[in-house]
Image (cartoon, rainbow, N blue to C red):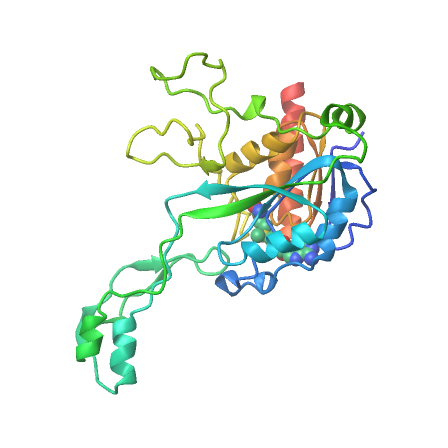
Length: 325
Ligand SMILES: C[S@@+](CC[C@H](N)C(=O)[O-])C[C@H]1O[C@@H](n2cnc3c(N)ncnc32)[C@H](O)[C@@H]1O
């Protein structure tokens, strides 16, 4: 009996996957924003993938698809045009997003042909790049201040906000014509969200839990946090455990936290069901699926990332076997 199948090829046609055979899709496709100039993030995926996702999903099955703030509208139109029902947009909220900064005031000086004033040197780590160099330093770069009148007026102005959420689109394949939800679930085993296993536990000692508190906690909301904010406990949105474990062989630049993927996989599926990720990257959806006793089918076009995913899933399978004996 197979536990997972991985394909090192484009997922657009999903030729290896039968019609109406997948219980749920959880995927993090390219956002089409050229993130850190990665070649695979230049464009949004072709609409074919969503048409084929609809084909392979069982009637009533759900899909959760990560997207970007700037292009989610295009993805949602493509999903709707492919036949999916838009159910919700979940927000994954985090604290460590980096605003894109640009010193507009200095640009203005330059444009006006005025030399900005040097006030010192940078001397700190500016960022890190997982794939190539560990850290790169702004050390030695000159710190400047605007000099022109307009430059001074625009000192500190910026072009964007600090990103603090990523949208995750929740869609559903329509249930079979002529069936109601219960009949659809009886026939296909899908059609309802797994609320019971994704409830948010109450905080220890929390008193205001309503008249009839459910022993497992609150119904999960469409905002998901994977980090505690230091403004105290937030009774609606916190997922108790946080942060992925970093494996040093995994250099994929956009690895999603495992804790988040546990939550999402659980939300749209039940044990022993099949999860598909057509853009698996380093295979985080697959790791979560196997650990939660689901089966997994993953596609990844890049050979390097594919090898990472394969190794991660082999490690999970090995670990799970060891705990059995
Ligand atoms: C945002 S990343 C997924 C990262 C993943 N969530 C993780 O935790 O590692 C999207 C992946 O889709 C892959 N990809 C892009 N186009 C593809 C295609 N047509 N078929 C399969 N994979 C593709 C890219 O190589 C990239 O690794």
